[in-house]
Image (cartoon, rainbow, N blue to C red; front, side, top):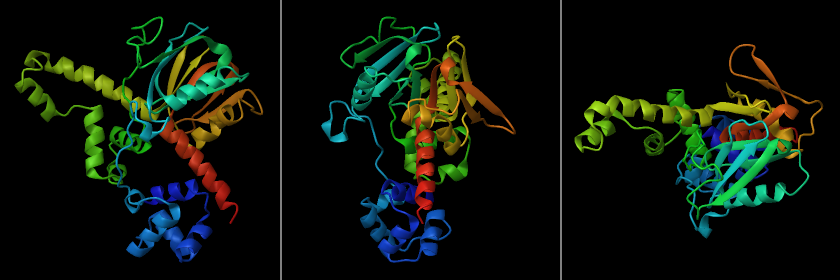
Length: 324
């Protein structure tokens, strides 16, 4: 609840003091709501929802899941499924294949025709990918009307056909990966169950598949192993930072906190690579571990979108707090 209230306040561009005044409470009182130290009275919850122009249920973390659309104008271009983009690199490293929305297609199509050092694309699978334009050998857009994904269809080993654009769902994925009971308790049980069923198969479900003859009993363990590997790859989309170098080498590290992740890479996104030097400093998970990445040696870097966006929110919050 606390994180959601802070998120909606920042999206509205309000300081704690301004929002507190708008709902008729003192700033310290409001601060206790945002930190989760005290509960919000029902009348004030409704007032918050009115000021922030959002439903009270959303403030409480109850919401309909955000799903990708298909020829559905009501969801907007950033949720309507366009198709795939395949990116090949001079390095000869593994190509990228990403499911993207109409909005992501339009932005990337335009950016590729500008003189940008880096282009950014967000997939429908929680991937924010920052690509060095000079590393691109060729790039292939394929709309949903086609059954193939590019000139080397079938050679995309790491492609995950999972369209799940709701950042809150990826927070659940992260909590499931870490067995974080406190994190899961932030969400409605039905949402946790819905996300779990999308990314993994339970023993009860396996039992039913065997009983229905859809899996042979002698093939059960190999089927479990195959599906667990797929689930682990989905966990990686929530937890890992992956980058490919111009040598073709690919590395994955455990992503750090959201703010550190955003601070490290936002110059490539917002300022087209304008850094004080060529090295990107990134603390990684673990004690006293730091990696430096040369931006000019990158093919691309892939970040968990939900963490990158949360980092942007936290930085925006700091800027708003400085106004108080």
